[in-house]
Image (tube, rainbow, N blue to C red; front, top):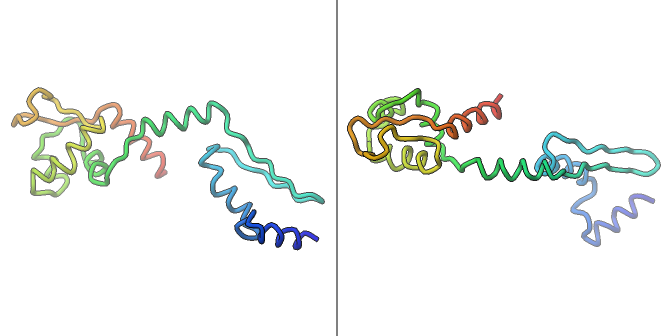
Length: 150
């Protein structure tokens, strides 16, 4: 009897394919309720219990999305090589770059705009004594990145 019902739902377009439900629940549930799992009970009647996100889950997700800047691979490389306070020339060397303008446009400016990097002399961005350091937000970004890769 069940194959007839599933074919009927398939023809109505109520399901994408037979057997895709469990796969899709496991695939998409972590986006809505991180750290929680659905349970599937196969008995005479097949039941699925899907945890509903709490208000706290939703607020945490919104805060995380708001606080996590979109970061380019160049900025990530910059943050990873930066140690303490470093001048532009040392950053060029660590990143194995030659063009100061490229460093400024693709690495430094986006990192500063995202609030991940700070200038030690903010009033004089072109000073020869200018150095760059990670902000608290930059340190937090790197910590989260390390946690994700462990």
